[in-house]
Length: 257
Image 1 (cartoon, helix red, strand yellow):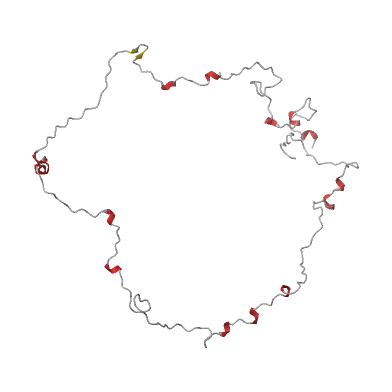
Image 2 (tube, helix red, strand yellow):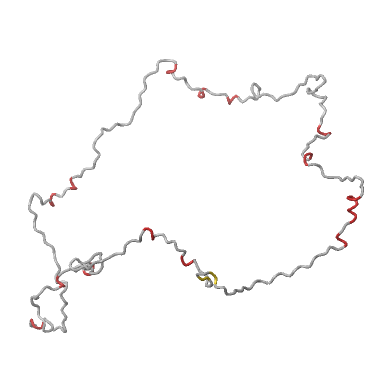
């Protein structure tokens, strides 16, 4: 196969006349040029025209004293008063007048007028009990009891001696449970230090460690002397690059032999 058959077309590789953009890696559209309009972030290479800003409102004009759109002037009001044209409005219907209710003969009670015109005998009626006597808890006949005449509690008579039978005591009787008596192990021996000279006593305390520095220090494995390049020359190091350029087009072959 001849070298001419390797290349496709009439193009052959040659030295570029100028820099190619594909040969340089740029961040792309991440960075943009500054704008040429406005005041902020203006391009310093471009001419900037004078810019003006609106000032603040005067102190006396901050508070608006006008009534605003809520103040509506009627259409019939002029600068000299009302225009004088008649105006009419529709009212609701008035209620019908009620006729006068004249009392009939049955509305009068002439029999009740005798107490006002003639002398009348006194009349009495029974009313309910007054509220003050409703809570009056007066004892009835059954609330009183006469003193008894039997037993020692006689008021005006001498009482005979009364003897009562009590229960049998469990202490000292034949059915007393002697197993409940405390044994020798119930009593504790008196400490001799209460009535004699007390001997010295000692106790074991915890171990006291000497104070020292508790900071953590690096061990032998934390150091890398083989990486030190301050005291001696550093050996050259190489890395593998890419085989082809990033912007090289792939070779397209029409057919193989």
